[in-house]
Structures are given as structure tokens and as C-alpha cells.
Image (cartoon, rainbow, N blue to C red):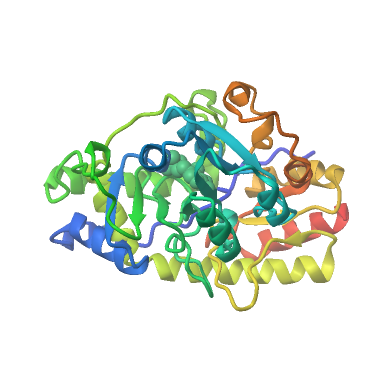
Length: 395
Ligand SMILES: Cc1ncc(COP(=O)(O)O)c(C=O)c1O
């Protein structure tokens, strides 16, 4: 196999140039971020946290205290930070199987005992809105709160509303490769103000986002993020094991606390261009998805025509597991990844915290056939040709 001197990022978008100006111009970055997100998500309370997983931990603890219940229902294929947040909140994880779109299997959810569940997480992976109406109805009838996870899908919407606004609380992440990549931070967008508002929910941002130091910090982050995305540089960074770039780790010992000022400044500046970045990735994703159907045996996980998805990366299902493994070997340089290393029921350190010992066959098959392909503006026509031609060969 040819050794490539480049590696394209699997997700996210380049930072728009206007963002640097906005870092300096916005008089009240925290106010702008709060009001911008609350308006988008019709939310009446927004809390800012140092990461998405920390935000989830706080929400899970809040729902557990309100209900007196000790389990969180988590999709069996999802980001490992979700079960890690449940364990960090002192709770058990009950898995619900997923279908071949990576979405909660309604039949599996119906069969689940929910009497000990405090909350259910809807994942909305790959920027695609998951249907929520019947899951919410079922959950609410059983006294279970619903977290509409928009970590990968801020800006996506279905006829049920914007992703992040359809449950009791919406989760946002501002980490690397997310729709709003401020390199750190997370938020909870509450439909109704939580009550009582305890320490975890009334956090101040850790440093004043109006201060020059935080604006300088935001600018450096933006520049560093963009440099690290350059294919020649990213290839070198990925080769440094200590940086854990692209690695998924299960770690309930994550940092706790509020969001930092520099992240607030950068997130507020990026929010102004969120829709432009989302539309650009959506166009690339649609074009690739169309060619996959026409020319290969691979199928993209796309939204229905009456929905809008934002694809920070696009999920694609291989016709067979061996074709998936070969695609990962041959197209890693182009930013094609396998997303998470395995389904959640296969995380060894989580086993002691699982309610029951589930075997989630849907999640296993999904994981065995899933690749993700990049959708960002760094992809040129020749890269798309290389992608399609390799996937055609492997079909
Ligand atoms: C679906 C989903 N939920 C939650 C999270 C947690 O966010 P963070 O990485 O900011 O802790 C992530 C992030 O990777 C995610 O992809």
C-alpha cells in the first residue's frame, strides 16, 4: 500500500476567517452565546460546562435526584462519553439496542424495563435527526426524562423541531470536530428552568470572556485548530501517541466544572457562521451520498427529504464487514474512520456498571459495517473521486 504524506481530518470545518474578527468585535461573548443558543433551541435556561460529558453528568445527576432512580438508558452504539458521564454521576447504564442507521431501535426500547430509569439519551449521531416523538411519549409515560443529544447535530432539524430542543434538555458539545468547534466546552439547553438550581447548574464561566486574555486565547485556539487540520501537519500529529488524536477512550474520571472564557469567546464567534458551515457540509454530504448509491454498494446514513442534517462527518454503511475493514485500511489518509472502536456493551471497564448483561446484536452489526467519511471544505473534487473509486472497487 502507498505511504501517504498527508492525512485529512475526519470531521469538522475550517474556521471561517470572519471568526477572528468576531472574537474581537463581540462586546458580550457570553451573553451572545447564551442568547443565540437559547433562541435556536427555544430553551428557557442554559448552563455552560467545561465539556459535553460534564454537562451530561450534571443533567443525569439532576434527573436521578428528581426521580430517585439510578439508571440512565444509553444507545448501545454511541460516544463513550455518555456512559462515562452516567458512571461519573454514580449511576448505572441500561443499554438499548440500535438499528442499522445507528438510531434507537423502537422495538428494543419498548421491551426495556424503565421503572429504574431517570433519563434516556437520544444520540442523533453524524448530524442526522433521530425520530423522537414515540420515544419521548414512551419515556414520559414511564416517568423517564429525555436528553436530546445535539453534540454532533447542532443546527439539524426534523418536523419535530431542532435537534437539542425536542426532549427535556438538549446537550451541546463544543469539542474538536463538533459543529461548533471551540476546542472545549459543553452546554445544557433546558426546555424549562431546572428546579432547584443547584451548584452544578448555576455555574459561572471560569474566566471573564470580555477580558483581552480570553479573546487572545480564543484567537490562538482558532489558529492552532486550523493549522492542526492541515493534512501535512495532521499526519505528523497523529503519529504522536501521547496526543491521542482520533482515539476514543472510556474515562469517567474526566474534568468537572464550568466552561472556560476563551472557549466561550470562540464558540460565540463561530455561532455567527454555524449555518453557513452546516450548509456547506450538507452539500458535500449529499453529493457523496448520491454517488455512493449510483456507483457503489456502500450506503450513506442521510436524513429524510423533509429533514435537515448537518453531517460533521457522514456515516456510511459498508455492504459487508470485510469491505468496511478494507476501506478503513485504504482510506485512512483521506479521513475515513471507523468512529468508535466497538459497541458500548463491549467496553470492558463499563461491565460492572451495566444494568443486566445485554447482548446488543444491532449495535454489533452496525459497528462492524460502519465507516465515516469527511464532509468538510478541505476536500477537493480529486479526493471525492479517490473515495468513490476505492469504495466502488470494494463493493
Ligand atoms: C453524541 C455525543 N454525545 C456527547 C459527547 C460528549 O461531548 P464532549 O466530548 O464535549 O465531552 C460527544 C462527544 O464526543 C458525542 O459525540
